Length: 238
Image (cartoon, rainbow, N blue to C red; front, side, top):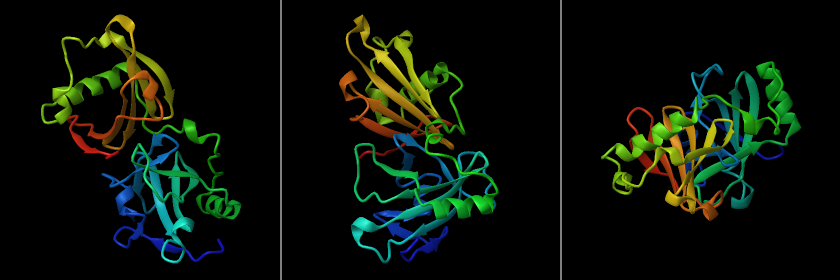
């Protein structure tokens, strides 16, 4: 890799621009990992097998030796039995509050990991369509949305007018990988809003865009919501 990289494991962490990796990127994360605009779920694994999401088997970084703008964080993952080496050099926040990764261009790294796993790497073209925990239907996502607002423990429960809410006003815009995007049309058909849902393990990332013009670059809120009871755990884009 030319630079000096060190390996990090749970309990032996690297502070990568405020994120304690790997612990802060797995489970109930401190910063949501994502590929493009799609959140991903990482689970640490000693053998490459996980129940859900991306198996994170190794983490390497040169953050202890490189200048701020040249630091790398590499995640060696296995998803759907195929290797995928992810890398980030992100050094600042963004409107979503995500930590963005992409597939490495380092052919030597890819080849070495492919040899260990015994399978070809996932290509960049395949990444947007990776699915490990898809939505069964538009109705499932709408149920989740309504559950969030019906849970009175959530602050957002006071921000909906159920008298003007019409379930029939939802339509599906796009399903890509594990992310489902819906549009809600305002009463009378004028204007509306977009909402994206992505399952990440036992939670779901819900991204809301107030107004049609806000989609897809200016989210109004990015929430991490618990699947079991629709409780909002954290606002990711604060």
